[in-house]
Length: 379
Image (cartoon, rainbow, N blue to C red; front, side):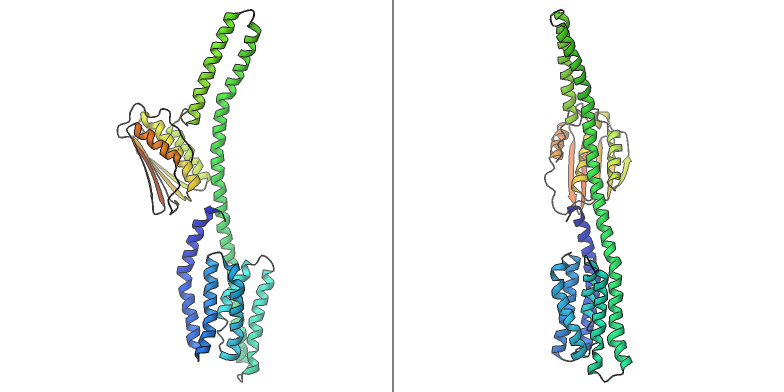
């Protein structure tokens, strides 16, 4: 079961339990009270109602298959007892509920199972003719047509309900894949930048080494100059690679805002960006790094549906919903950034409350060091 679908499933389960269990329980209690003449009648009818409620509760928990056989046997037994012994035309209440839950979730032969369920209810109801002195039309209406019709309608309604839950899961799976794709795109961008830095350098180094080999015996001074240039070029490439690895290579907050917007939209997340003022240039690069790290964390750890980014002259605030109710694992990237932000007279705030996650970085008095090399370690 993908972890990204769990929050949605929990919300749907809670909604079903709150909205449907009370009326189902009241309806079952009404059947027991109205049709029971003895304690034995009440026990039989109540067992069918309880089995139905158990089946429904397990259905909301996606665990019905384990309990379906027992619940079906109990409710299927209550119906003939109700027809032949208790004179209860409503004894099919539990079977109607359990059967309608089970049939649509069968992997095969669902139509045949639905027909068989309705046929069983009708056939058992017809046996009332063997013990009743009532008119045939009255018996058929009360014990055959109405119970079988109710089962058929309820079961039929559960098929689109099943499709609804399938669509919800498909949407959740699609969203998860979009988030993974967004992270992959970020990795591809990193790989492209790395190729730009090192590909050109290695090609130039190769040409200079080839030239130095030709001149090693005829022009020592030229060879020495070429080696100096190679050394300087490699040193510069090492520095650029470090800057890229630390996510500080030509980091621009405006570009990071656009990149974050594209990543969130690709993952199906609504994003709102408010720019209250232009960012102080001395803090812009470090704030851009905070935004990049926060974007990665939201895509990897949250089940967000919306993100709000607020930019002021010396700070940035990112708020997203969909945060898990349990504490997140240590976000090492943000921990590293907190130290760097504090080292530049700033403050990095991280808060997780009521399913919302806030990340805020502020520089009341941006220092000259803001935006220098900062390590970004993805958690």
